[in-house]
Image (cartoon, rainbow over all chains, first blue to last red; front, side):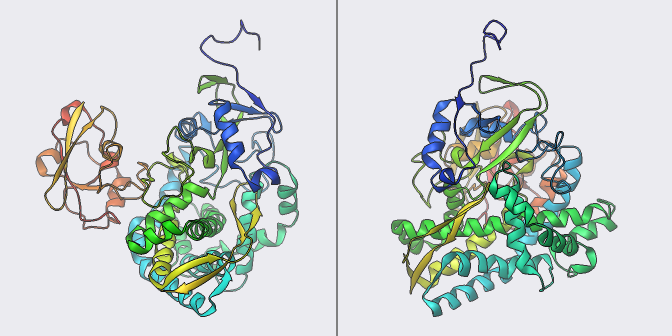
Length: 404
Length: 107
C-alpha cells in the first residue's frame, strides 16, 4: 500500500516475527506478550499471516463488536469461508447473530444462576470429599488428583453422561482447543487421533444417552418448547462437552498453582475464606487458561488506528490483555483482593463463556474446602507444563499438604 | 455528570458521579464501591450486580429484557419487585439523583 493511498489517520502496523503457537512461546509467554503489547495497538504476525491485538482496549473492543469481528468464519486460524471445518461448526461459538442469539439463550438458561443454586450443595459436598481424600494421601499431583479429578467427579454427572467412556472427555476437549491453532504438529496430531473421541462425543450428545435431570436433557427439552430443532440439540450438548471440562481443569490448576507459589496470598485466604471465589477469579485473570481466540473481519475496519481489510483473521491475546499495565495495577502480581471485574479470561460480549457460572462455582467450593481443611500447600517437585494451542496449564504439579 | 446514590444494607450511603451512557454498575465499580461485584463485567450473565429500586425510580427506568428477568431469579439475595441488575441500567441525565439499594450479598 502506498503512503499516498493510505488514510492519513491510520498508522502502519508493525510486522513481528513471533510464533505464538510455538512450544518455546507456551513455556513462557509473558516476555513475548509484552513485546506484542508494546509494539502497537495492532500488530501483524508474518508467521501465520494474521493481525494480533494484545492490549486490553483493543481485545475488549474486538470482543464487543461481533458484527465486524465475526465468529462464524471460525474462532481459530482456519477461515471457514475458505476451508472445510474439521468438525461441523458449533451453533454457538462459531455463529453470529441472529442465529447465535437463539442458541445462546438456550444454553444461558440451562446454566443460569438459579440452576447453579440447585447444584451448589452437591458440588460443595464433592469438593469436601475430594479434599478429605487428598488429606489422607498428603502428597499427590495437584493436576491429576485435584484439578482433573474434581471437575470429572461433578460435571459429567451434572450433564447426565453415562459412566462408560468418560476417559474420552479430556482428550476430546484437548483436541478441540488444539484445533483452534494453526496447522502445526499439535493440531495435526490431535486431529489424526480424533476419530474415537469424536465417535464417543457424537453418541453422548443424543437424547437417549443423557440422564433425564441433567444439563444435557435440559437442552433437549428446549426442542419440545420449539426453541431449537431436534438436529440442533445434540450440537449444543457438544458445546458443553467441548468447553465445560478442560477449561475448569486448567482454571483450578491455575488457582492451586498460584496459591502454592504465593504463600502470602494463601495466608490471606486462610484469614478470610470468603475470598475463595475471588481467589479463583484472579487466577483466571493471572494465568488466563484460555489464552487466545480468533475473529474474522466482515468489512474494512479501523482498529487502534490501523486499517484492517475485510476477511482478515485477528488473533486476540486474552492472556496479554489480562496483564496489560494500561488496564491493571501491578498486573504481574497474583492478588486475591483485586477487583477482577472486567478481565477477559472468560471473554466478553455476546460470546463470553456461557459456563462461567459453573467454573466459578467449582473454583469457589474447591478453594473453600481446601482452605478450611488445609494449613499449607507446598510444591515438592518441578511442575510440568502441558502444551496446547489454546489452553494454558500444567501437566503435573507435585504438592504436599498439611492439615489445618 | 449524573449523581447516583448506593445505599448499603447497614444504611450507609455512597454517592457516585456517573457519565451519561455508562451503566450504574460501571459507575459503581469505577469508584471501587463495595457491594457491587459484577463478575461478568457487565454482560448480563452473572446476576452479581443486583440492586433494589424504589417504586418511584423504577417507573422511570426502561423495562427489563427477558434475559435480565431470568437472571434475577438466581440472585443470591431474594428477588423483590424492585430488583434490577445495575449493569442493565444505562445512566441518562434524567436519572440524576437515582437511588439504588444494595442487597446483603451478591454471591
